[in-house]
Length: 285
Image 1: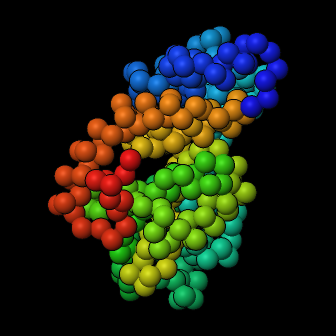
Image 2: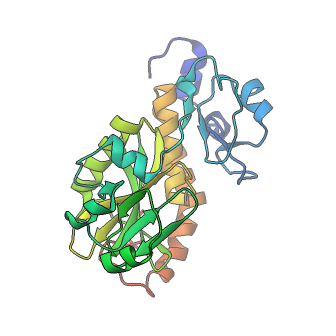
């Protein structure tokens, strides 16, 4: 942080929690309040009270036809996430994307089942080409949908994976990224999403198929952050927007007050579910 004024000097060396808290906002219809994020519930507040603030636009929050800010550098997630078919078309031939076709004749050419068949009015899953053909329904799009061994959600900030959560039977497990066997693939996928879709902050759902390869299932700006993710997102957005590091004592306070209780709850939860990817909640500090 370059110190340009006495106010900058005071801020850099301040020991006041309020100097650094509530300096990143989330515009969300789902949150009422938060211990360190500012929460924007009303569209008018977005334009009137938060000029100059970094603001994360959560999925479902309508910004209207107005520009969010005169300078959009303060807005994170001003773009919406496309569906998987559009992503596959934009990033065709990418090894991490399922095959997509508009012709049932192409299904023979290396498509893996199950396949999702879509039309304007419906979407159905078929386990075999025989069942798809016998349906006699006119579909306009076909998407590979191989069975997963397990699935993950990568939280991506500007092309960088900042958190990974494994989902086992709808139960979320925080992944130890230091030992994650698919970290290389996660980094590559995160960069691709940033380069092609220009999403500041999003969740990329991937699966490990039963054949062992990694495939993108969806991309979403519906963040639904857990306490670990809230801490890392606050830090990333604050430091990206203001060009200054948050002090370590502030990060530690957030960890002790907000994240540590979550670790203690999850330490008991993961005893019931076996995962080779899980972080050891008892050893994290």
